[in-house]
Length: 120
Image (cartoon, rainbow, N blue to C red):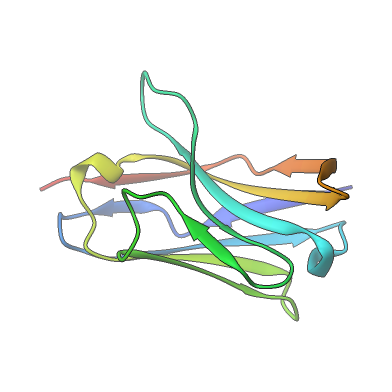
């Protein structure tokens, strides 16, 4: 049974920081590309950051320079360090795991999400 369990969300003031964690089980973590998505009320889910199995990363333009995605294959965990948070970062953040072969997604899993609220 595959599980992606997010933690670390909460309420933070503008300019503050949070670190999200996503612990994976039931998958061969090291071969999966891992990502964080977010969905704000009334908006579509969007990619925040991705870290591939080769540790290459990419970020949404709105978070570049403020957020950092990392992974620890020994702990089957992916992290999202969020600094200089803004009210527009408020959303439910979802962990995503995707196994890609030959450019095609073979399997994909989602966590249940963790709420991040940036407000004074």
